[in-house]
Amino acid sequence: MAKGFLLIVSGPAGTGKGTVCKELLERNKDIVYSISATTRKPRVGEVDGVNYFFIDDEEFKNKINNNEFLEHAYVHTNYYGTPKEFVIDQVDKGEIVLLEIDVQGALQIKKNYPEAVFVFLLPPTMEELKNRIVKRGTETPEDINRRFENAFKELDFVGEYDYFVVNEKIEDAISDIESIIRAESVRVKRHSDIKEKIISQGGK
Ligand code: 5GP
Image (cartoon, rainbow, N blue to C red):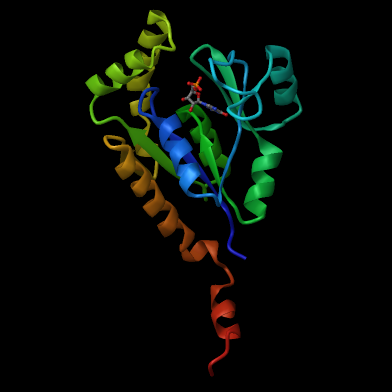
């Protein structure tokens, strides 16, 4: 069986990660989404167990102590973490698991899971990034500034990723990620039984 893999998508706030990932999942029903846990309060319209598992600081700390996270990080004044058991089970089943996480989390995963695929989503320009953060209207002015400053810091890490995708038009960004997935799915290293498989189909 083909091995599944982790598909990590990171990028500064305002690059449209959420929209791109949502649309990617809509169009590719075979991709499984990893729902993170967070201590952030839900935004309007966000649903517990769908967007995130919204938990308090104490529960988050317990989960760290019980080694329940594949990675976790403190981002923009809140904790975020990827539940380990779910993700590992899905990869073992051969699934492609999408993790929309920040740079710190991605670097932790890179250390332990080098076979994961790392995609960095970029805005067309930094000016456009700021416009998008402001337009979203869900953050206070302090949050907006913090997120914009963080964006520059996060950009320093693009060199750690395997691919970059520019989100100018969402259609193109999704199509780029789909191409990455297609190519990664036919990597020989993910199909250790490919020779036996083709021979077993007969024809000699
Ligand atoms: P937001 O609060 O806007 O939903 O997310 C803030 C940041 O946290 C985003 O960069 C998002 O990718 C990141 N994030 C979401 N879930 C996780 C996670 O499980 N781990 C890490 N390291 N970052 C996450």
